[in-house]
Length: 332
Image (cartoon, rainbow, N blue to C red; front, side, top):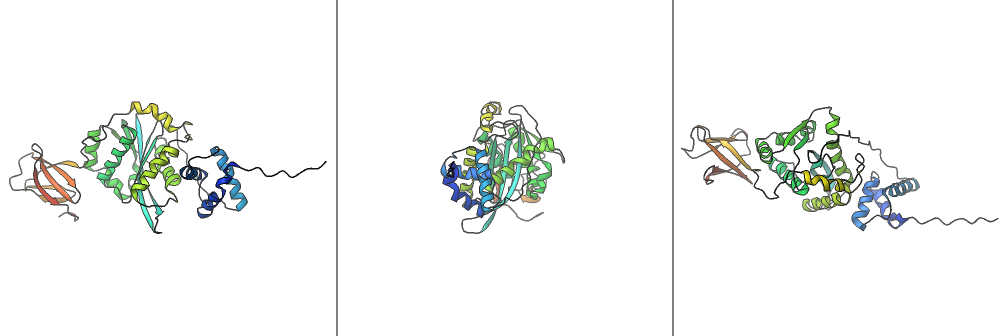
């Protein structure tokens, strides 16, 4: 009895084999999840399951001797919360290559809804200021179509990631925004895994699956690509903890969010200050002179920050009292 050698069966992913090998050779630490997303981004679809992709990539690594660098898996404690009750915010940073061959440090703001695990991410090429931080919240609320009753911030990481973040969240400007938007702040305590699990997982996922090894052209394109990634992958894959697709769960949770008008006149850069007896106001440890006679007992004024300038307005008439260039000194 003769046995003929069976021709090796062609695999569905062979059409991408050269491309995948090129990616693996350039970035040996690529995960199968990121490769799956890159195929979707460039070719529109993946002709097999994620499990098949993992098996295919594993076989290529073995055949071409491209070992994967070790990666510690992150776990999160399960804490089921009612729809629309809580979201969590995290911050992150990552260095990426640019199209001209240099490197740039990007800063990320991310928010996740605790019930559905629906995610939003927003990037900047500079550290977040208070105004940027509030703007990121506005963009997140617009993306979700509303806000939750409570937002959790990781107290450990406010200062650990970047000193600026700790300053931002405790500013008077941000507190006014919180009061205006009517959500509660909850700060995670150190060593509190039940409340920090979702927070710690989100930015790691966005950085490792979307941003890592992505070539930076400009910040607008980067944010546009991130939203597209969220739609096709970040919120479209089955979540490992809840075992459901965030987008599908979010379709129900969205109805429980607090409505927010996309362009409502929030006081993100409008502050209220007390006029001092010497006809000055103190803004960020610097004194700004007001016209003589402005002071009255209990007198308050509105302050608007516009670029490099600080404008002082009458609260009742809303007319301009004085305008100064913002000082970069401290205690001037």
